[in-house]
Amino acid sequence: MRKRTAILLAIVLLLLACVIGTYGAIGLYYTTHFLKNTSINGIDVSGLTAAEAEELIAAEAEDYRLVVTGRDEEQETILGADFDYCFVPNGETEVLLGEQNVFAWIFACFSEGQSYSMDTSVTYDAEKLAAAVMEFSMMQADQMEAPENAYVTLLEDGTYGIVAETEGTQLDTEKVLAAVETAVESGKKA
Image 1: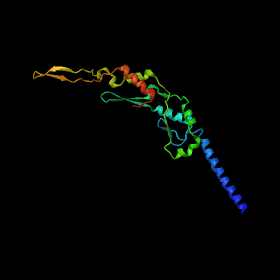
Image 2: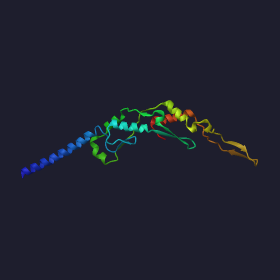
Image 3: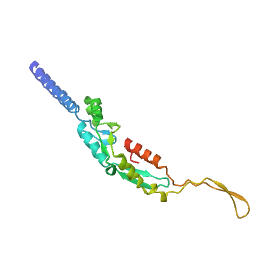
Image 4: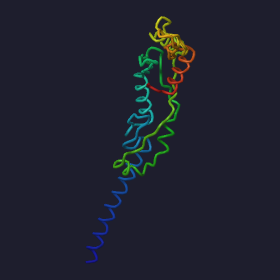
């Protein structure tokens, strides 16, 4: 009876050691890989290394497009390729990887996971960006309508009436360029 108990105890301890060892080995894997259900800036990076995540973010940057909407709801699109938009890794993905609790991997499998937001470093050609913006139809002088203030006018029946102001579509090119540059630098898409 004693021998049977000892064998049973040894089997239980061996199984427990296997479970703990497997759990630890999987945790060790996640020291270099992102946990399940993890995203950075809306990009799923589950199971990826920091370098792989940066490659995925860079690929997303290659497909960058900014939609600019004018006052009359006219939309123009600038593609990142038009102004050499490119992601520059700054090591922040490594920092995010180091912050995760690797031994909580089992909980990450069954939860919504972690969603990180990081400022992505990008480079672009400012002159090409400005040239692309200046090609918008809304930026052409012949497409702009100057605003008009409200005014009083004499009506046909001899009374006076107010003619409402017109907002117009005239743009301040410097402000438009500054707003587009700010949007590009922050990674906005609309």
